[in-house]
Image (tube, helix red, strand yellow):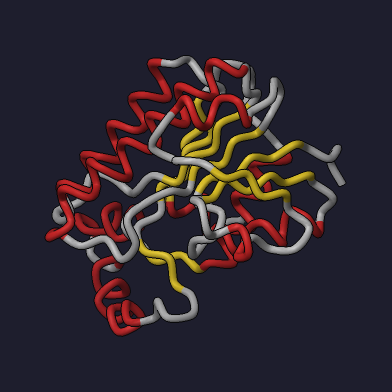
Amino acid sequence: MNAARDVFVTGATGYIGSRLIPALLERGHRVRAFVRPGSEARVPPGASPVVGDALDPEAIAPALRPGDTVVQLVGTPHPSPRKAREFVRVDLASVRASVAAAARAGAAHFIYVSVAQPAPVMAAYIAARSQGEQAIAAARLTASVLRPWYVLGPGHLWPLMLVPVYCVAQSIPRLRAAAQRLGLVTIRQMLDTITHAVENPPGTGDIRIIDVPAIRAS
């Protein structure tokens, strides 16, 4: 077991956050959950709720402490091409706010769930997440960037019907790399990967990219 860490999670009541926090607590980490007003009751037991606006760095910064691990999970639920404006208003604005606050507070490690890239679809979503990665690099944060494509879990199982398509694509040399980069991962693999990242940060100032094959290997 690694030393317990102080972990600050944005998007704490979302699909990944609500499952990640109990996993971190079980391993002895101290977790503060950043939530919007009115969502305090949805914070998993054992975590300390912190209320504020995830789009405002001035609201986030006072809640951060030097040496924190920040896990950035805010995002538009059920992304689709018709939500392009939301990707800019919520996804991009929130990561920029968290990056600015983390840099100001002296956070030790910034963990960001981005998206697999390049990809032939979801251009607006990928653009917003890519700009989030650029903000992390510009701030010179020590960071781990996860790049899943689709996360399978309760209520998120429809892509299983695409498994035969993936199998065919991986058998064709010119399609194999894309099929692996845009492969499916499970919520359990995501939780394990984020937990491992929390406990094993990269070198100071480094940005570690964790793609689909690495997430699956977790």
